Structure formats: structure tokens, C-alpha cells
Image 1 (cartoon, rainbow, N blue to C red):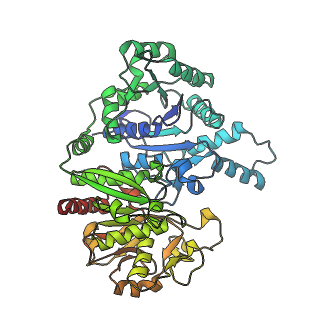
Image 2 (image 1 turned 90 degrees about the horizontal axis):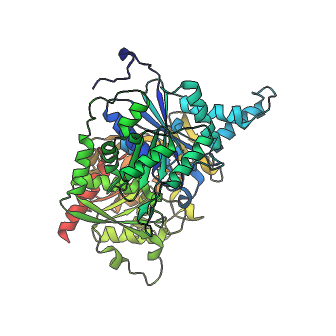
Image 3 (image 1 turned 180 degrees about the horizontal axis):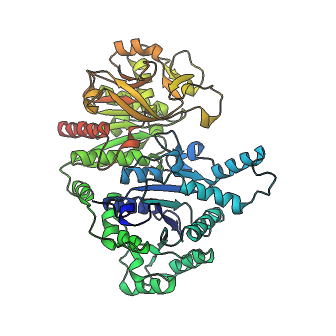
Length: 557
């Protein structure tokens, strides 16, 4: 489809900005709305990119607890970012970059560094213009080849933290004009059961708050649990000063992958284009999303996957993992039932590992940091190995698979990780140097937490006759990493003699990337995080194969 924004059509080649704010309460699904809108614009032939502005003072989420913030999403270029960037990638297929997520902490850090260097020539450094200018510069960087840049403002309108961001986007509207900027506002229309009706007042108050900062929303997205009646829609339009057609109801969907179709049916993409003065034109090609929803709603079987993890109390801590397993189900047209199991349950004397794991068709141990829950994970890996249950270990899950093999097969009962303290048998240890594009990277054990990680995309070479080479359909792969410790290659020979084959290594042959068991139906451990690159329309081969193995297992049970 030709691109209607191309200069040949007589319009400006400059990117247009869509700002997404939220009101009333947090967790309304701004990230999902941004991702869905971007996918709809993509389906109309436009080039899009999504950015996230986070108002907190941490420089990035890398050192935050998963219980505070959910998972840390890692980009190819090694940025530790907000989990919403995972949504953006999964819905658009556009690889996120360092420049797509910024926090107040990073902006203030850069400004203070400049001030200390004397870059401001003795001027008083203030929120306006210095902070707001830095936010605007971030929003507008690297947008030359894009039609639309979607900018999601974290937090809720009215929060003190987000005020500089709100002011920055107000200034951008002034500077760029109405034909280059559109404001969308996500709000809540609660249902009061006692009165038996939806209430529009919170939305009215939220919009009033936004207009007090000089921003009039162009499109309102109203999150509600019940259908929004026409009279209520008209009421919101009247009091909030928007067109009735621009009040978009957003009801809960059966699956997040049904949200783009739902928003399109309500006219979101058409209204956003009209707000820019662009005639929507023919309907977008949404066949990709129709197919995904067909596979999700009409499965031909189901599998039970056990995830033995550390942060199972908050599923957002494993957001990408959860979605990658769903994608594996989409690839095989099966429903995936995920059981989140706290690894610490398997660490008491009377814990019955077998009773809990026997009903499962496959077991997965995800990434984690620290010793808590490690013994429980080792116990579940042993069960998967001995009972021939399909097993996938990711990052820490691969490391513990090596420790388990060393202890129970290779006759090294004290095998451990230096992450847990000093050990005579460091099967897993901190790696002091590795090769990257910038040359050899070095680190020290006691160094800065955020600076001691191997982060971002690295290549790996796979053994030609290995199970993983067959899964990937090739021997050279690139995957994203986020870890501080590595499996010690000094133990490679003894582990391989006991059936655990090192089938993937870094290109220089120094760092183990993948282990597998040829004597097992499906047993793979990977040092990287394959879940970060999986998409519903392009499931990651490891997860597609893992769910396929679980399906075979379900037929054996």
C-alpha cells in the first residue's frame, strides 16, 4: 500500500507525534493502547515507532525489584527498559532502542553532568527550559524516517512527577502545530453496581486536570467493564470538549492480541488520523491479527507448563516469558495453561516435588538473581531430567541445569555458583571479560551493579548436528543477554561425559550459550533470554519447539 504521508503526496515528510496520557488510575493499559494503535497505523502502510517517558528518578529499571516494576526489558543495543517496550516490539515487530525509553532520573543525570562541566555557562538551571528542552530533544531524536512517533507518558495526570513531561508535550504542540501533534487520553469510566450505571465524572475531572495544564485531548479512550451507552458517550464528548466519534470505548478483551481488532472496530485509528486532518482511506489489512485470534480462540488441544520461579507473586515480573509461551501455543494451535510455582516450595524437607510436577507436560526455569529458591529449581530440573519431561532453562535456569548435572551425575556434590558465596566447585562464576563490538569488556566482582552485566544482543555459534541447530534452522544466531554470571568452561569436559552437551558457544568459543541433552526427548538450557524476541506473528523457534514437545508429552501421559 502506498504511504499517504510520503512527500510525493504533497504532505510534510516530518514525523507526526501522538501523545498518550492516562488519568484517574494507573494500569489502565496505556502501553497496550499505544502498541495496538501503532499496529493499526502499520497495517495502513505507515512507519511507526513508540517511546516511553517514565517519571521516576531511577536512571533505568535495571536495579529495581521486579515486584516494584515488573520485568526489565532488554533491547538489542543493551538498554534496560520498561516492560511496555516489550509490548511495543511484540505488536509492531519494530526493534526497540536505548533512545525509546527515558526516565526523569536519566534526564536529570545528563543535565547535572552538563552543569558540572560548565556547559550552561553559569546560567541558572531550571525545569523550564532545561528539563523540558531535554524531554523534547529525546522525543524528536532519530525520527527522520518515520511517519508517526507515539509517545507514552508514564504515571497519571496530576502526579507531581509527570508535570515536566506534560509541560514538554504542551510546548511541542505549540511549536509543531495541530497538524503534527495529537493528544490521546486514556481514562476510566467505572461501573457503580449499586446504581447500576457507568459514571463519567472521573473522566470529566481527569480531562479538566489535563486542560488546566494547557492540553486539550483530541481523542479519549474510555476504559470500561460494560458497554458505553450512546447517551454517556455524548455526555463525555459534551463536557470534555471532543467530538462524540472521538470518544472511544475500550472494553476488556479476551486476549491482549484481540485489542488491535477491538480498537479498530471502535474507530480509534480512523479518529487519530482525522485529528491530524488525514482522511483514513481504505480499511487496513488486519489478516495477521485475525489469524492470531483464530488460533487463540479455536485451539486443537492444551498443555500444562510449570514455571518454577522466584517472583511468581507478580506475573508482570515474567511478562515476556508469559507471552512467549502463548506465542508457542499460537504456533502449535494449542492452549497453554501456565502454572506459576514458587521454587521455595521445593526446599523444605517434606516437599513432594514429584506430586506437584507430575501433572505437568513441560517445566521451565526462568532467569533470576540470587540464591533464594535455587535449591528448589535444582530439584525441579532433576525431576525433568529423570522423568524425561521437556525442560527449558533460561539464563539462571541453564546455570542451575549445569549445577544439577555436576552434583547428581558428575560426582561433584559441592558444585555451586559463586553468586551464592565462596565455593570450591564454581560451576557457575562471574566472568571477568568478554568480547563485544567495542572490544574486550572487563568487570570486577564488587563493581557497580548496573555496569557489571553482559547486556544486549550477542552472536552464538551452534554445533551443526545439535538439537538446537535443527530448531533454529541454522548455526549462527543472535540473542539478547542480561546476566552477570556464566557457566565455567573448566567443567565442560566432565559435564559432557555425563550427557550435558555444550551445543552453543560464543563465536570465540569462550562463553557457553546453550546446553542440551541428546539422551532426553527435549532438554535445553540457554544463557540468553529468547522470550524477548518472540512475537505473536513470529513465535520464537525455541518456544514453538518447546510447546510442541509439551504437546507430545501430553499425549504420552
